[in-house]
Image (cartoon, rainbow, N blue to C red; front, side):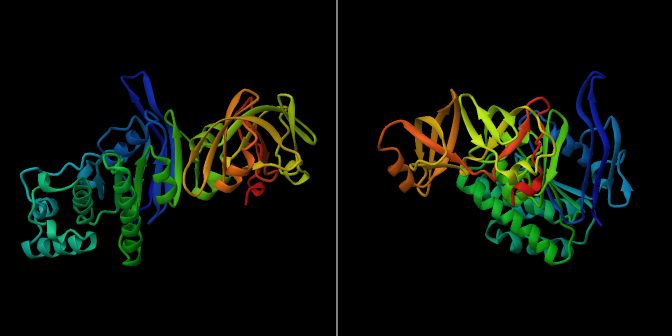
Length: 371
């Protein structure tokens, strides 16, 4: 069993600066948990405390049935994959893979069998007799992954492992890692993963659940779908999603959202799912839910400032009440709606609106609103 539990976990530097503020997080056995957030949010610090590379100031870390607060990294049943691969430059791939088992005193035949098994899984058999300097970035990352896999740990820890790769290779490695996680589970092997990244695309495409962090605190833990459809607060709303959610200041009355001199009708279905009625609000609407229209129905007038042609869609940039917003539309709708000039009309989906309390930043829209 490789369940990981963080209870009231704290990290204080120099007796003054608190980097981690008493966080609580349960990671189930076999779960792929992603810690995501901006630089400096303490996600890597949290991972290093789990690994035993950073002393904790307070709280408890439990891996399986054991509290590991004072155990050294080698006793925690973990394996870590770093951003810089950390391969031994003077050892060929074969020795890099088997070095940990050799230090542990495993028989030579067992080590060789384990090397061959891992090399087959990661498709690196042709690389076994190469030195690290003879590997591409993607090959080196697969070797680093193999060195972790060969230990058969209870928990895999990944610290931004793909950040040094180009975009195409990152996409390929995302698929490899998630596929490896799935195959380990199918083989009945321990496959708990804690994966740190600042890239929300990695988080959304890889994680069973995502833990969003800011300034040493956990803001929300949810599945990718729940995180996207019902962000808990303004920070999560702006951080998750690409292009990011439009956030527009306004006021709320029983049947209308007022934005500057314009208004949006608040559908009865939407109103019924508000858990409270803040007067001063921030209206949140995903660019995919802000439709470019040419008919005479209700819509918001905006001024287009630019457009990004993405092939299958167009990102339209505009100003609404002097604030920048983005709408995602099809190339055909873009061509039809922008012939008359820079003035455009945008219609938000009434059942896909998020109402944030401007005072607290909390999402007042209950999850049932977004299916």
